[in-house]
Length: 130
Image 1 (tube, rainbow, N blue to C red):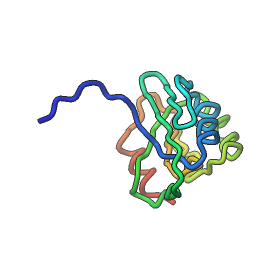
Image 2 (image 1 turned 90 degrees about the horizontal axis):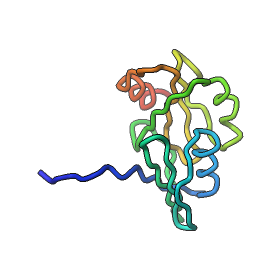
Image 3 (image 1 turned 180 degrees about the vertical axis):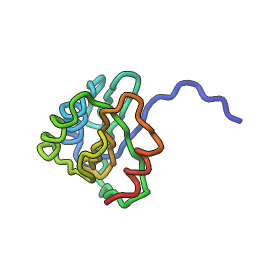
């Protein structure tokens, strides 16, 4: 097989670079490490998220398509109270220490307070509920 070097990050196409940058940095806590008019690179611990603006419509989430991000927090209630301010919406209300959101472009984000979350269950929840 092919030999892989280092995993460099996850690239997301976004309809509004400024809005998406605010969502991921101000709401979810990613830090901006590089920025230009053609992309913004964000980091959180060892994860790099690269946002690219696109002139084409970003398709909204349609259950089972695209990717789902999973992040943890110590205060899910505070996050839940801020979601709408950043152009996101809740896919599923807070249950079992987990909140499912849809970012401004339709990407699903599972936010959990669990210390060792059952990743397979979070993916199942994020792709099978509406």
